[in-house]
Amino acid sequence: MSVNFSLEGKIALVTGASYGIGFAIASGMAQAGATVVFNDIKQELVDKGIQAYKEAGITAHGYVCDVTNEEQVNATVEKITKEVGPIDILVNNAGIIKRIPMCDMTAAEFRQVIDVDLNAPFIVSKAVIPSMIERGHGKIINICSMMSELGRETVSAYAAAKGGLKMLTRNICSEYGKYNIQCNGIGPGYIETPQTAPLRERQPDGSRHPFDSFIIAKTPAERWLKPEELAGPAVFLASEAADAVNGHILYVDGGILAYIGKQPS
Ligand code: NAP
Ligand code: GCO
Image (cartoon, helix red, strand yellow):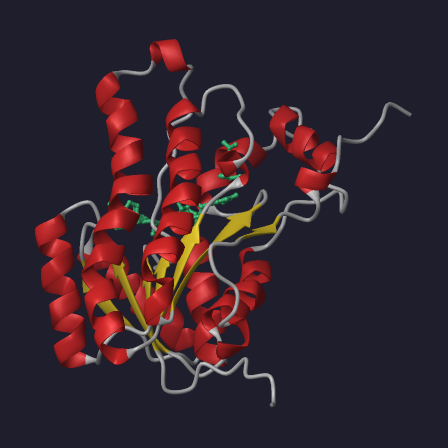
């Protein structure tokens, strides 16, 4: 039996994929043969995303949709199914973070992070699973985080959401595995994207941001990772080669979770 990493003939929906990690994962899936569908909240970003995919030689289908809005999500999934075809692969990538000390954070701010990072993957997964059951197969990949395992100051809402997303991943695996649906997570380490740009800004004297130096010391490779480094793991989990992988969180972190951190010289 040959190992099949191909995504030929598959339709992949990657949420929040105009740029960043979602764009890199969608691009990798396109290289593996998938038809790429993505969404963003704003038309201007969808248009920018379509142009960026085009420049990468990819014909992507873009839709305006707020993943926290169940009515919009259901209507968009229906529209995608009519215009492109049924969704075979879902990557719940869209996400936000608010870096605020917990006791300074309002309940509304906490809820907003939970809404995008945890409630939305529930909403979008619920919208695509019935069709996957009907067709006898499906792949769901939830973009988790180091904060699915670890805490740190100022990210209480984000860590709670990403910890919950790890368990939602395991529960979808448990509830729908019998329909040949595999639901796994990818836990990226620290990736160079707009979301982490504030943590990498050079100081006025040109030196590294203290958090930048902190991550360098916590990563065995002594560097931030690139979004493109997540594409291969995502293609693997989306392919038939991973049909027996279910409920697993694949950490693509350069070894951070295995490493106590650089010892003092
Ligand atoms: P990013 O650069 O901030 O991009 C996030 C994307 O999600 C944007 O396209 C954003 O669209 C979209 N989005 C946000 N809220 C949305 C909503 N309600 N509906 C639809 N789209 C929405 O983030 P990233 O670094 O690429 O991260 C992508 C995912 O990886 C997130 O789940 C993040 O938590 C996770 N992650 C990131 C890292 C890292 O180091 N960067 C590490 C681990 C996990 P707008 O531009 O319109 O807001
Ligand atoms: C932060 C970072 C992290 C990364 C990622 C790590 O503020 O610590 O934004 O949360 O986004 O989730 O895996």
